[in-house]
Length: 192
Image 1 (spheres, one colour):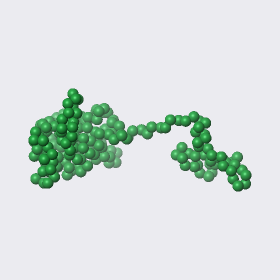
Image 2 (cartoon, rainbow, N blue to C red; image 1 turned 180 degrees about the vertical axis):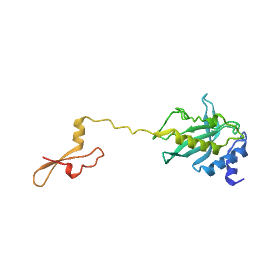
Image 3 (cartoon, rainbow, N blue to C red; image 1 turned 60 degrees about the horizontal axis):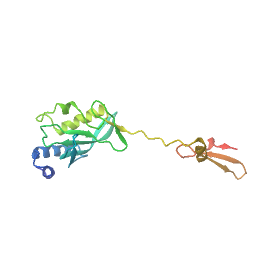
Image 4 (cartoon, rainbow, N blue to C red; image 1 turned 120 degrees about the vertical axis):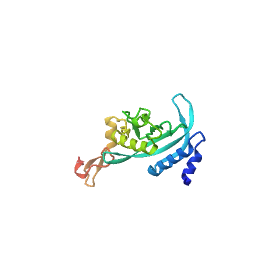
């Protein structure tokens, strides 16, 4: 048993199958380096809380030939591996959940692999591989649309965006700024 595997085993309460769970978590960490094991409080739907082992971090997912790092959390109950992990996507503030076939509006992941979990045939690495493939086909998260700032009245916009300047020869010209705050190119200026 490696040092890290031993450290993971020591994190686990005695109610877990400590050697088995520590080994599986260690293998996950070798394949998915962005996932970190921690003991944390899990809140069940009935309001009860329990200290459970979790794997939290990001899962690399390929979508349209681009790799995205989906934030996820897997909770391992004390009955693991007899029961499947409880899996969630964990959107950042800039993301939102895309409710669909495999993810609820709360971010809970529902996959046939989890529904048909068999402790002698299923494991965490295989689960994460299935999640990566499914999320590549049906992305569970997307970026929030940028909220547009409230539109000021046309008069206020005009005064903020137009500047009347004078030239050395006494003529005047107006300088307009674009929505991004940059000036228009020289050939778009208006002479008065």
